[in-house]
Image (cartoon, rainbow, N blue to C red; front, top):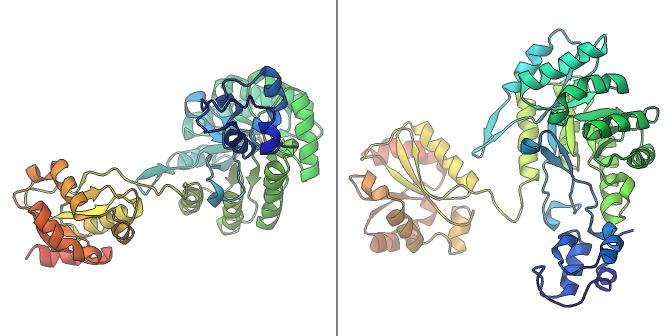
Length: 444
């Protein structure tokens, strides 16, 4: 059972040295009890206290890394039930299942390799290939595993309940640290031995929460700590129940046997049935979500949802404040002003691109706020835009001194013109009107 902040405080040095970054030992203890900081941040804690506080300082959900150290997918280590309480820090992995005995295996792997999307300026793509063993023998499964890694370029989940086959496939790839999935009640110790020998994380395959808790304890005793847990849920309803209970038991009750990232395999006939279940698992605590279908729209939907769920609600996604080019703008091209909130910028950029009028976009630092929000918060001001105009170097790229201001902040046009010395044009309120504005009003 996790200790309370006061219980932890009684074990600390009580020097209030501030070396940990907190003003008092009590404040540090409260943060430690809420899993917001590690015990190692206290330089004066004794070895005895470290041992006693191990349960309180360890994360309620273990951090598990899959893949090579330089590009590993890290899952788990979450400390809250709801994103607004703090944030979710380790996005779940999105995996696509491939059967090793499928004659069309290579074509599926190539499709997975090519699944890449740009979303608010970031490249997103599925993280894993889940290779299910349907091969006639161990050598064929091992060959399929190597092909899956080389062709797809993704991290691997190797799926088989045969420890000998697992070792044959995983041993040549141990430096890639694939997830070895298939530790059951019948083979737990044997699978743990393979995972321990190869230094790979292990997937626990259970039929219920009770069975999962029993298996993780058996495997931990065998010397393997890096685990992900499949409770057997395959539908949206069961995933919601199992994954929520796991999270609550781990965080609220400090129940270590279920303090591991869950893996969810979506079931259903085709993408239209699998997508809703997978989406529930992404939103409700899965560490890894695996689907069978390689449809681009399905992957994009899950990746977009993941990006939204794992965005820190206290830190809006931002783009770098600077001048951006759309097309190949020349010295007479229009100059539009907007904020550095990603959604605002990419909305403006897409409309400017649709206009086919090569343009410059001056992005002003508004700390990630949209136009009206930034204006109301005094983050989008005449002084701020003037500073951006002077420091961005845009003046040297244009023959004119005309700047287009968002229509919603037309009220600041006079102040901006007076302070900057630029001629201020008031643009449209809605981004959707930008193409017509650039083609008519600007060109005229």
